[in-house]
Image 1 (cartoon, rainbow, N blue to C red):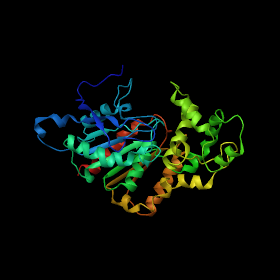
Image 2: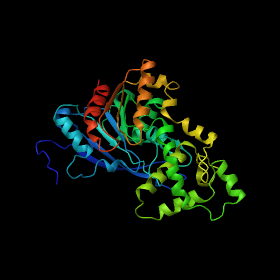
Image 3: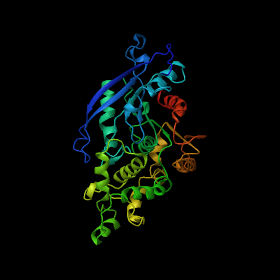
Image 4: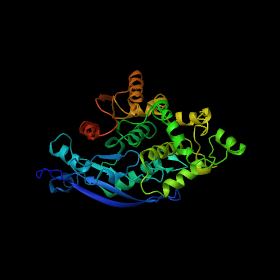
Length: 361
């Protein structure tokens, strides 16, 4: 068991049930009622602070995670509430409220954007969850005192929300956020196609070929999903395949298509389908900075970092974002560190106090 410092006041973790109207009837049949964890700093309950209101941060977790992934007990390391309590105790950051949303889906997660194939998770966060939290707790209920942060898919979510939904957020922090899709996704699709080949039709008919040429499912995607949804513990290769299908559902949804989305490669030959891949690129942060520079420039803080040995090659996209922000004169913090995509929670010791400094003024 990891030792805990008995002198650190842990604050208080509150667990709420939120019934979403926006997630009701989503295409995946995922529950609209979600469990939301909220960490309240020790000062929240101290009489000395009376009716004081606090800035608030939202934790956007990575793929396969949910808010409770960051609040549950961990052996030999801190969970996020424990990290927050320590940073507060060390006076490295002041008191703030931190919200842990549940945005998990049957496809293993989502990218915190709106998709007809998954659900309108951007609207869920901004139009439902923010007002719900502001009503339930003593938050400083305005954009300038609200931030979001995350790693990987959560980092992507923070970047996109800083671009497209800046009226809701005063600052963002993106750790190893998905960017430069040509490197991080395109190079992994051969592995996905190999996994899907296990579920291919026994005979490829002209109809199958015609479907595949436009990114429509010839049956193998549905068979794979049925297999995953009836399997108790998918292996690593299957999870990566599911992840790429989740990205396809995020970036190229099509309500008229089987499964509700299209894929960007012909599964039998591996040929890229330009029209479909362009749909992905339209969601790539490295292609959106200029378009949404107004929203980014309006933020009170942008923090981006990445390990320079990231196994998904995200550091290249991070560098591109940094370069574009510099060229546009948009103030931000950019850092690289000697690390990969894994085991980098310690970076929150840097980003969270910095975020607090941007939204507490």
